[in-house]
Amino acid sequence: KRRIGVMTSGGDAPGMNGSVRAVVRMALHSNCEAYAIYEGYDGLVKGGDMIKEMQWEDVRGFLSEGGTLIGTARCKEFMERDGRRTAAKNMILNGIDALIICGGDGSLTGADKFRGEWPSLLEELVEKKELTAEQVAPFKHLNIVGLVGSIDNDLSMTDATIGCYSSLARICEAIDSVDTTATSHQRAFVVETMGRHCGWLTLMAGVATGADFIFIPEQPAKEGWEGGMLNIIRKHRAMGKRKTIVIVAEGAIDEHLNKITPTQIKEILSGAGLDTRVTTLGHVQRGGRPAAYDRMLSTLQGVEAVKAVLEATPETPSPVICMIENKIVRRPLLEAVAQTKKVAEAIEKKQFETAMELRDAE
Ligand code: F6P
Image (cartoon, rainbow, N blue to C red; front, top):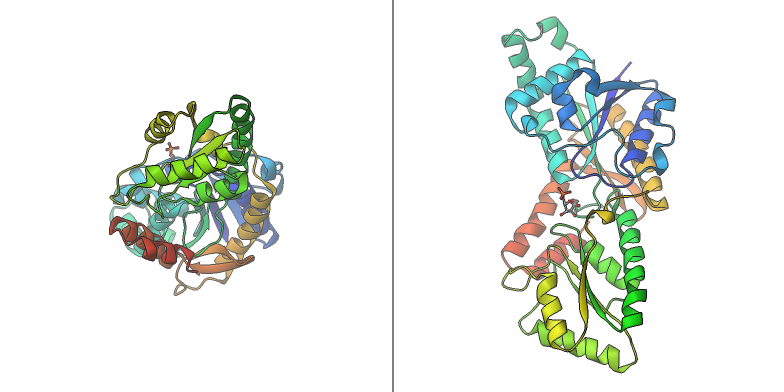
């Protein structure tokens, strides 16, 4: 029987539990054994109790729970070769030669590196007499499959990452609440949203809440943006709007790559005579129950991930499970990560239009 490991890594995202549930149950359905690796790569390096065989009922109730019930961590040891060698040893001791990881681009790249090093890690384990040649012999190849779990929706080649629609819903609910108090007092609010270097959450929240103005990293604010923003806000006020909402992504920048901060925007709005407050939504955006979309996405992608493991050959590049135009598809993991990096590089080089095109490309 194949033994498949599943883990969540990096920042938690609503829907990660749904992917663990789907992987476990699809693995069992496919006559494999399923193992949960607790606390991300930390659990893989520590081994022992952190690697636990899962049965059908162990993931009951997972679908609707937020965060990740098997834990996640940012693991320093796994960044070092010694840590990865210990991780390989723990996998072999548990008979696991396939790993499905739900996490962001950093976690997925780490996994692919692990796969590349796998044969030499096994050699080292034998050389150092940590395992015998007989013990490592059946584990020639490591299969890695990525599931993108992140609220940021920042990975190229997929339309949606697991968690982004739950986070978007939470941001909209929060802004709806801010709206009522803003309208009562005729105030302006600057709302800061998460997303790291990606403006997707902010852009979509802006559309979904009818915000007056947004700031996102992909479209840096041009010289004179202060006046442009005030003109739009004054126009809205002149039409009878009693509130002003400006949403600023945490990665927002101007065309000189200087960070645009909520306090900076508050000062401009206050200077124009608006009674202004700042609301930082923080980790509320990442917590709580997954939206229906993320339950569905994580389930379909978890099923596909197990299929990808069972169909993989030693030559198949590690896949990442994506959603493109409403279809669950596989893409080469490293290509998706490389494309994502190109967006960040284009922004650093101030090639903003190229960055937008790259982000839109499949
Ligand atoms: O990647 C998810 C995310 O929530 C980003 O939006 C944010 O920049 C970052 O993680 C916050 O990380 P931490 O939880 O370590 O503060």
